[in-house]
Amino acid sequence: MFVPTTFHAALLMTILSTVCWGSFANTFKGTRNYRFELYYWDYALGIFLVSLLLAFTMGSYRGGSSAFLSNLRAADGINLFYAALGGFIFNIANTLLVAGIEIVGLAVAFPVSIGIALVEGVALSYALQPRGNPALLAAGIAMAVLALILVGKSYGALRAGAEAVSRRGLVVCVISGLLMGIFAPFVTRAMTRGATLTPYTTAVCLTFGAFVCCFFFNTLLMRKPITGTPVAAADYFRAPASYHALGLLGGGIWGLGTVFNFVAASLVGVAISYAIGQASPMVACLWGVFAWKEFRGANAKAKGYLAAMFTAYLLALVLIARAYGS
Image (spheres, rainbow, N blue to C red):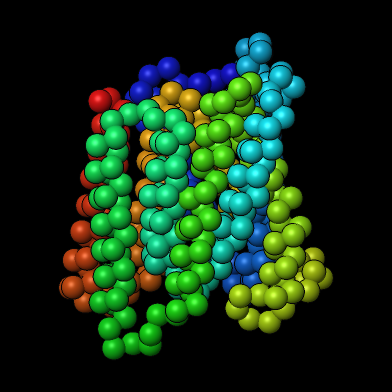
């Protein structure tokens, strides 16, 4: 099994996970008039397939008791359940996040949802695995919360005089964040108690749980959607092949980031790895601003808030990284 042996290697993996988590939604934005409920089937399959691929390659490197299949057989059944349950909960949260992106855009949905998940997930994970300097970690989380407030201010300044921000969209993002913060403690439990799971086994169980969840939650959303009219299953098969490919690619990007984040956590702890990875709203905002022009026509006030948000997230990253060294 491949695992990083130095902090710098683990830090690089968490930064790459940040980029992946903040970039996957571009594949959905790349579709046109395609319902997210349909996109999500391919996305969920993509995250599971990538996790399996990495488990049988990086996760089985050099064999031994830590290799994927050996660990799968030796691990406590309750840990397998916790990892899959974390994936089930994550899937509900992430489906709501994609719905929020459709309603209020990348530059708002990501900071609101992931900002809430960051605080909740890190606090709960640290309680289970107290690794790193708590004062520096708390300072980093505080800077991330400040960044969340600043992006809200920026969006408010941008929308001044325009139509009101969708309350439904904001509520969806808040619920998504609260659920997103819950899955990390289940992962921490699976990786730290009893006959533990390796990061690769954890990722496979989590993404399997997420895929299974689609048959319940995504099916429900197709019948009773958050926005728009109900979606027929036949619409999935009528979609162009390129849309299915984008869904699989989006899942592959997120799945890669997740495996890297879990692998880095084996050295630095879940709280720190998760906290750095959840700086993904900064990446999402960059995509929203520069690729999708969500802040086109922004005034100086909106741009100032946005610049301050990026600064706050970078400071959060530095503080959280230093928490490990201390």
